[in-house]
Length: 444
Ligand code: ADP
Ligand code: MG
Image (cartoon, helix red, strand yellow):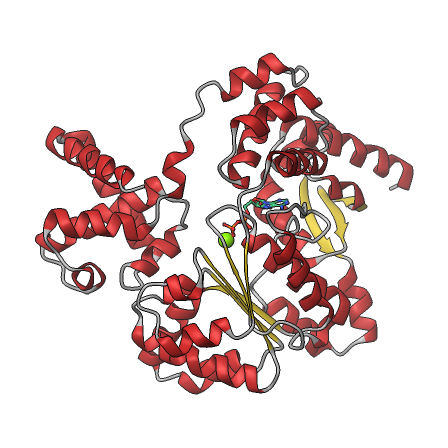
């Protein structure tokens, strides 16, 4: 097919996509190259593996629909990782297999370029940049803490992506949430795979564990992590950790771990001030290819002062409404979109607050909730906890499961649906849930 024709088609597809998919559009889509359109398959080239993953996971349906709309044919899309060919010619096949086996993909949005620096996060940002320059040498471990939605994961992923770009394939980083570590450990113990487990965690250049507070009360995992930590530290490998509080504030964390975590740099991220909130909004808008007026940006930044994830959500909401009405983002529209914004109070709720209220109300112990017993006097409060955790916090199903004895996400989902259905059917349960929510929010 003639290249110009293909380019023209692709531009139209991009345009259609952008107009119809405000939330998933990113400005880097402009760097995607159409390669060919043959036998009903449109091949597009993406230079980065995590871009390819993002497109497949978040955009495939929308891109297919835009392609079908523009071409008038039943076209499907094939996302080709273009750097792969270059790597194959310069490197061994093994290296490529390794990368493809690596199932963790960094979020393409989470780069230093996309991170807005302000007084609230300047130190954490500088520390991450320093670590990305000389891992294992400056701040080790680096411990970043702050409440939810303030950019901890973003910064840590930026660090890994910068290192990967700088050092390339020789660099091995493991980025995972604390639950994944705990669950992986439990699985390794069950399957007698500890040797492999230890090899995996102790032979990396950088180990990043997000939300390390989940080690709280998990004695065996703490023990294992202590040895993992020492092994990496002694070989001068970089360790980066995040939590929603300082090391010593993590409940029931062994003293020796607290002291290890404190021996590097402990840095806090605070809530962004109004100027930083506005700068973040401009940045996020730019990434989505929109350009809201200063009035609108300042309106959102004033209205939402809790956390950055909320801020982004508000922008998406306003943008979505503008798309729906096929008009510009005006102040009136922004007001309309955010008019019914729920109070952000709920978003700071932690799972331990929920657990406190439930254990007190039902007179059960935390170990019961985390244990395996299935009789109703335990199973019901446990399911309620999972339901409330899903409703009132921003934790993923996996994270919630991790709090309750390492249960998997399907168990959490089942619990959620069960309680949801009970609320529909039974007024007394509905009232009970309301009463518990009131108790939890009062603890704020
Ligand atoms: P945390 O891990 O602290 O809960 P995240 O890293 O998940 O928070 O951040 C939540 C959202 O806010 C993400 O979309 C992230 O990109 C965005 N965000 C937070 N801080 C900033 C910042 N300073 N600049 C740009 N985006 C930010
Ligand atoms: Mg996070």
